Amino acid sequence: MFQSGVKTDNNPQAFKAKVAIRRNVMAAIGQPAVFDAFAGSGKMYSEVWREAGSYTGCDLKPQNDGRLMFCADNRRVMRAIDLTQFNIIDLDSYGSPWEQAIIIADRRRVAPGELFGLILTEGAGFAYKSNVVPTAIAHLTGLRAGIVGLGKKQDAVIDRAIAGLVRRMSCSIEKRWQAEGKSGAAMRYIGLVLKGKG
Image (tube, rainbow, N blue to C red; front, side, top):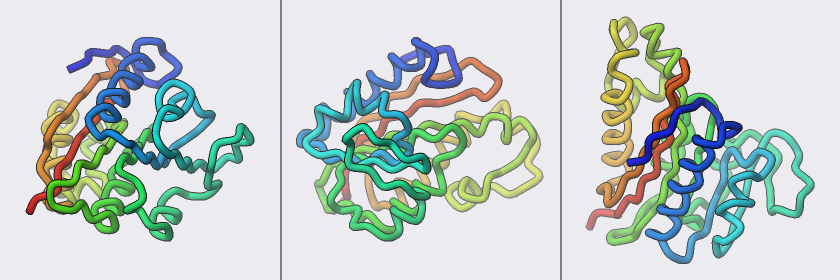
């Protein structure tokens, strides 16, 4: 497990941990074909994903740097394209990645024995501290609105959401890496290698 101390990729500690997690996932998958759902200005592309076998990004802002990119809401794109062409999907959101993760679970079948990489940046710490259960988290975990003390149980909520996602995808977790932010947003940077069940 990596330990990190910050909120966004602008901080060197978080950036190093995020790069390391992506390198670990890429090494575990082999022949990576990446869909970067929150591609942004391309920092992760420059550091890691440019070494992948193929790369497709998505962002709401146009990026004119030569990367193959969709300029659109990633939820719409993921509902429209063939996700089986990717074996790593990066959900580096600044909030909650779970709505996009559910789209992946429902649209990207993982074949028995196939390895699939999923990167999650989970930043719903403020919602948990306010005892708010995001809708996608409720779907994956069964938690209901009005639960008190979620802020102190953030890691348990994330573990439960990952378990729900993995069940939905009919996979097992082969490997997991995680780094933690120490800011008020309590960011979690997670890398998963999933394996399709027979």
